[in-house]
Image (cartoon, rainbow, N blue to C red; front, top):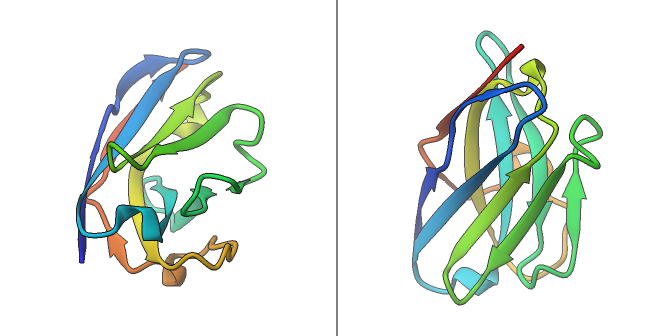
Length: 126
């Protein structure tokens, strides 16, 4: 089992940047693929980005491609989401998620993931 705690959210102006972190505790972090999702008020939770267990493969939603970068540090058991050129429509609660396995599977839906963090609020003002 793994526990996930997100941090780094906050209020930023449009065009600004934030870096989210997701610290994992528990066993075998390097055996988990990791993902970020977000949920805006009144909307469903949507896929943002994912990274394979090794960090060798990454996937992004079209809406964030070229602006967001997902990365991980297995030694620190932490996954990051660097968010640049933020837009008001990026405002949401951002969730970190973990999926057991080293298959390289492109996990982009909620059901693909086994564990979730509590979320961190990101607000982008216009």
